[in-house]
Length: 168
Image 1 (spheres, rainbow, N blue to C red):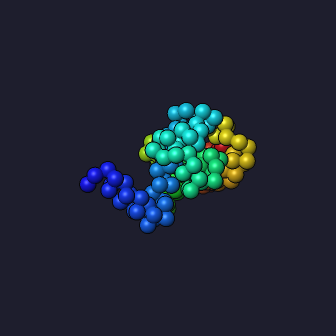
Image 2: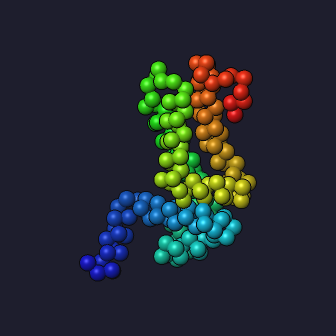
Image 3: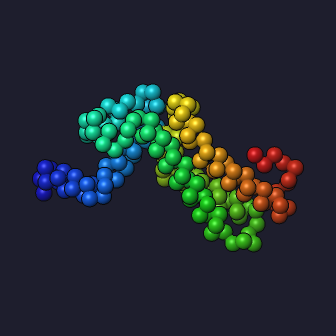
């Protein structure tokens, strides 16, 4: 298959999926650039160029750079959160605190490593993004933090973690 036919097939596949393949490719590319270059040093033109498209084409999928960065931040936390919740849910109810905490920490680290661009970008740029983007993302981060606090409280209630310790 020649390059033109291949591009046409990808374009038709993408159109059939509502543009989700292109959207995800843009987000993957943006996450990689935000991770390596930071928020301010990454422009829409940079993202588009790395995707092999014109900057204006990004507006088909996203309204702004802030929407892209908001999605990168969200994906980074949501995927890690989902993996940790699933790992904790898979632990038997009668498991000890160390088993529960080990499952949660292992899932957290595994997800960080598997989604490295998203999670590393999140860590690197969270303080750099405009306040409205940061504020829009706080609820999800707070939910994840609350999940961990509840997990430690659950272990403390079982008497397996010192409740006098600052569980935060």
